Image 1 (cartoon, rainbow, N blue to C red):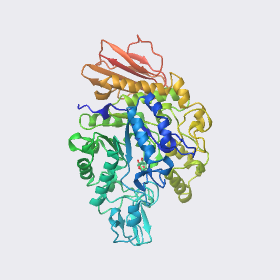
Image 2: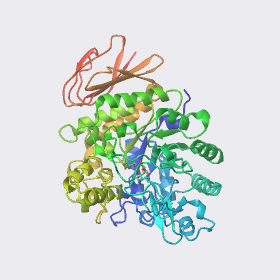
Image 3: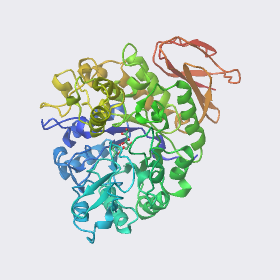
Length: 560
Ligand code: ISL
């Protein structure tokens, strides 16, 4: 398999609004990030993926961009940004910027022009349609509730917005749109960025007829995803982008691609096709969603997690490349969702990290994950900030008449603000995140869970992540080895091997607070073994043939 720096790297995601506030306005900023680079260096990560820091009215916390070439006032200045990159590079840390080009803000100059008149030079930069019998052009639902169309008085037509109505979708069919985007990408690459994470990049090509979607459960609006996810021209556009821009730089690219299957995943990431290096797939984070979508919540099952992860591991092997993640700024905290964020918080956070980092692919750590940060339960909807959450609450309570407490329970489990409470730096007021009033409240558990305490405790989740990252640098089998699932039908244990030439890893993880017995399959034989990492004390002489695991235990052996 071809060696690449981005296969060997570990990425750390920063959600700048919630990372570290340096100027006391309650909002994280670039100088805050600069002040924490030594912390990231200590952790040992190679790359930072920075969520959007461009000029934005913040309807969706920077994912609605009004100026692609300037820094958001609340985050600082271009000089701060330049200093931040240079300080990262000094420490051997690369910077991947978020690229949000499926849509802009409605306050972007292109859209301001576009909505003025039907013959404006920028009209065709966006997707405009006349209404149908006094209604929206089709029945697509926005990801943030309600119709995906907004009526605009000025010209009497509707524009498409898959996300909020302040995020109009760009029209990629228009070559001028693509040209402007490529120029903007070169602007940042020439300033020294080391790659892009591309927001919902598999939604940029829509089936031109924009057909109705099939409504679920008698609802008024329907998902139109089959007409805009992995659409007819998406691969052509990405190959063009690669030819025009990406191929001229030594960078890494990761596409955010909801609804992608492994087959599609290969189309995006097969090096011979010259599109992207890797994608974020969503199948494992959709395991607790029913047919009604994200808020149709049901318990996830270990058997399904095994099937999904194994499918991606096997199908991309030698053909594409995986990215590995359990949470990000859109997902609940991993330890709350897949582990036990109460009694076994530390053990299960370490187990989940082991489970993920030992797979084939590039691992992503979301800020605070390395501390085992947890979901939050605010008592009132007033305390929430996320547009998706607030719109959903309004719709469920006001339109469908659902019980407000029941809707809050959904938010406690799945809401995006679970991941957006401020980073917990220490046990001082507001967790050391700000001297002012934070834009969203800190999680009340910061006195116990914070970076300062973690750095001082050699058994912390932080030090465990540090060790995992170091192991990756020492053992090529962790990066390049072939994955094989073992104990396929075990209801509580997820175990697998990774093999590279004569080296083999045996990864053993217990996804429960029970004490099941791990039995090594008979076809795996060894003459030498080394315990690489573990989250409980282990007697070194213990053999692997039969191990009674403790709650949420994880062990990785290297055998020969
Ligand atoms: O957040 C989600 C889970 O409910 C997804 O629907 C999410 O909106 C989707 O994965 C796209 O996410 C990306 O684009 C959005 C932005 O709000 C997210 O923060 C971003 O990661 C629109 O730009």
